[in-house]
Image 1 (cartoon, helix red, strand yellow):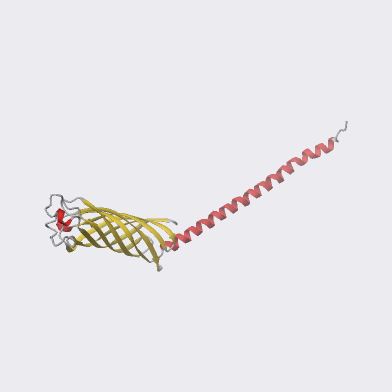
Image 2: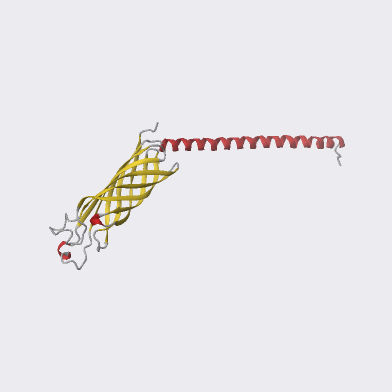
Length: 235
């Protein structure tokens, strides 16, 4: 049987704290390096996102357009009809959040004439259309790298054409609103922008639009979808 020297064993015991200290130092150094690298990576990512947000929302101008859908009542006693719509607008931004929007819309559908109307079988479902011209403020209240939320309040006037497809029968005899060249209108709503690039986005806009054809109030709900292009730079 071989016995190790007690002195060698004692020296090993004495070296153990030093070895543990070296191991602890190496471990803490590696941890510090990893932590520093993680912090630097996060800082770079946040700086990159901040630059992209600034690049996206410091454009001075937006032009947008697309299609949509509207529910519209064509006469006081008529059922609401579905209409296909188009829209186009331009917004000038004073800063990242507040802008002034001018918008043109158009909606086309077929009126639902009451069955009891004596001309119902003669005209069927005549085509009608409305064209609001609206102006007002837009405010972006949530700005993110990939998305933006905004709200708007627009007011102006609307043109209504209700007897162009009525086979010579007046709108009044069909129970439709009278055709007019200018009646007050306004719209409120909100938009969700899905940013494809800093200067290009896809927009979804649910909205409420009020028209006043025939001297009464029409409450119309619908939505719009389309493309937004941004250009120019704020100083």
